Image (cartoon, rainbow, N blue to C red; front, side):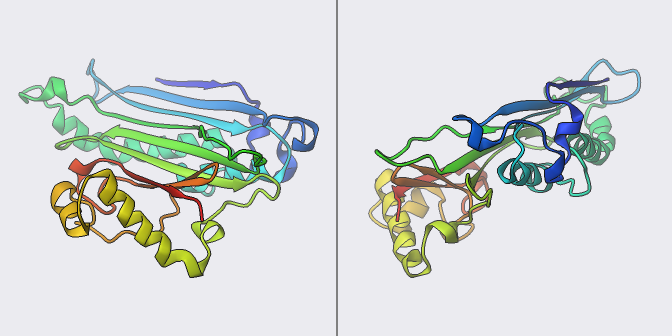
Length: 260
């Protein structure tokens, strides 16, 4: 049974700039937010009482400007992976359908009534998106909007997965910011060195070799200037998800540096 919960009229979710409804940013002090949600609970097999759970909860801008349009495009293309969808809700439905189709056959096998592990295999897939909490530097105008998404799922196997992504937008232009917009090319190596030094400090390691031995960091890949970052006042936090530079057991790896 699919449960649709949303507070924004569907017409306001079309991705064309001209279709957004709401007050322009110039006319208000705070960004106008609404939420769109989709919740699906379906039996893992015909006649089964056990269900799998798919849920999306995304805050989206209700204003009529380029910032709202660009956020919607990111939610559609990068978060929900449905570039042909014409609304957030349609993108949610397309993504949920693809997840359901991909895993339904395998789930039915995992939940075989004869399995000793049947009760522990509670399948779920959830995505949440909301404005990221951040601090402003003293006297700094809030010119960047940061948005955070979390994906939490168990799709069978040894363990689940938890992934966090940050998206940063220029409020005036609506542009999605890349790390190259924040860190000049001539400072890239300095920031990478600072990242390594800070991680060693955070984990009480004398160098990168000891850091890898203690934590697994860089076991799967070298440090790099990821686009998964959060601007907070005069600092920048880089975030690496599971398997990006370290094994699953290392968890999420974050490193906070002074902003270049």
